[in-house]
Length: 367
Image (tube, rainbow, N blue to C red; front, side, top):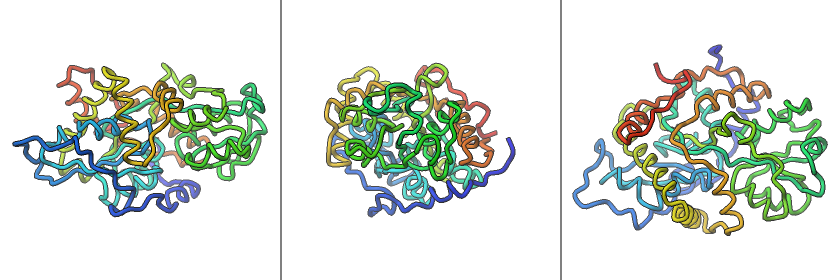
């Protein structure tokens, strides 16, 4: 790929948006510590660290982090090094937190990871693991949209200009042969950039005809009478595409590889536990959502949202490369050089020790 790493002004604008949840940690909201995650007697600090700061979204697509926090998997692996948490509402604010050192490791979507990496000239982060696939749907008003061709001429929401779902929807629109100006969202379809928190109310009020959104927003729309017209998983080979990655600052990775290994070991252990205990895991994730946001998800939202997400340790690197190309084709991103965005060395060490197959970086790893 060409070595250009300059974002167009559209994405520069997105990255410069005001941070959505400022708190004492500087970026994001401070998540409450779980009283069940006590440090084991005789445990030692890892790499001499007092704490490791972990970021994630209050979103079921970040189920690994939610459950690992709630059930104490992170703290178990970190020993006497305290696991501290911060929650975020949007990718740009989490990238800012990582750059500022307010978090060390974070769960995040592919587009913010790509944007953060390219904007820094490949110097701020590495993707060190995968977490989830799927969980994105096109939900529509069934009275206004009865087939995919009916989407033309309608008002469809995405979470944010240039975010993962926005790029996917713009790519899908182009595949239909329709034209939309990526920056304004105007064209054969009107793309409305709407925060996931307000999209269900906007849909209920009739100002939106549908939305291309992640869980649990998709299931919230269904609970308001919407219909799933398309599951994005159906557009990908094997129905798998990355929705959540694990990133770490390059500085922290270099200075504290044992701490990174501990967090990745906790992630792999958590995903294994979730698959073996799906109902208990779903309840744990919802309990952590309630702790972090003050409100648990009702069963008619949580149950379908949980079912649509596949947890995976594999970062599905080839699909991230494809998503970057979709952003380029939409005019949202200059052709990026993503070589070096992955460092899966520690993850593959953890997977091998757990008797699991190693994963591939699709040629985008550190040489």
